[in-house]
Image 1 (spheres, helix red, strand yellow):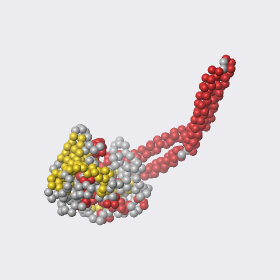
Image 2 (tube, one colour):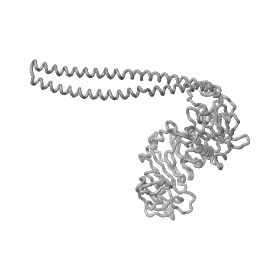
Image 3 (spheres, helix red, strand yellow):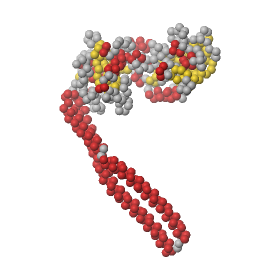
Image 4 (tube, one colour):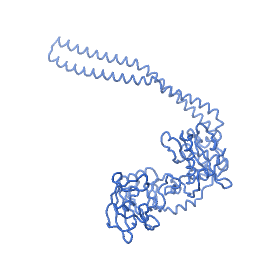
Length: 550
């Protein structure tokens, strides 16, 4: 059974980009050191190759689950790939070509089988109890009785009002004995209607109460079965957690129960991709280089997992094990991070925000495909302690340089996003246009639309376009025009279209070949020079400014 695959089984050529987009990490139980294993563009490219394989076989599409790949280095220096799936694949834990489950499960196999039979019996009884015919019968009859009761109540109310009116008339027109007899007749009618209501209630209760009692007994049994199911599951989990034995790269062995003493471990702990891959690599003395996990198949029950998307280590099952599993794994040379930091100057930093001066040619956030993972967001994520929580508040085009702001927590991100939506953020861009313009200052207002067939190209479209508004001011002129842009909306490529389109300035930004610049230029001459907003924590104005590099 082939477990170690060649890189060529998944990708056609190697990828040299080393910038991780995520780190699997945990603290070493012995030293307290933070240990990391990266998810790199190469690991993601291998994962995409595995996705293409999964797409060809219906067996992998019938159920949704996490899959993972681990790049490892053999003692000879060759690189190989391990692949794993979480839990069971079509009911089986052992599938040819895939990493096997962690040892120890065989020890409780008999108990597991017996418990699963009991759990299945409980499941079937629960189904029967929830689908009792008396439930539907009670619902239908209750509705019918409610309608009948409403009709009786409405009729009696109408009669009562009529009796009140008759009493007033009788009191004015009759006297003594005649009045007494007439009023007594009205009172008798009222008493008879009271009897009618009581008879109806007795009839209704006589029919509904037996059904209600059957349903109450069934619900009590359901609660009892759920408690039994919970107790059986906990008992099995305790046995399995005691039996599951993990190995790390120091050669140490520990059971799940030892690693999470007294903790509440969800079902499936130890069966996820990451623990299976790292455990296998440690046993066979393979050096992990990078790892990637993704979802494949039907979306998860709560729709939080989507096919083809990469995901982090799950907080409940995998994250508590990472520190132990990575112990003994040589850590990456931090000189790589230092080199990255030099190309990504941080211009402002506090415990809520980070602002950088983005260089041209670098994405603001990772793209969808393996060759578009290097970005400001992915670089910062492993340069700062809370990097995994970083979120870019806005975007700059890949070829645009300048100020990019990132939030360090979700609340800060939401507060700044709200400022953008309410147009409370002030941004100033500086650009060089590849020619001269006739107007020195003004406002450009054009509807922009992105044709799905020509992405990322944007164009003016008066029917389908979204409003976009830009103020501009010419700074200097020569053969080219140096100009200042202040966008009031944030449409894709807004400044580039406003500059190049004949309905705007009619002159493209220097270096903007997408929008018609033919002049020789080393870069897109567009720079986010200033950024101004209210600090989400202090409320004070935060005004950031950097030099224009051209």
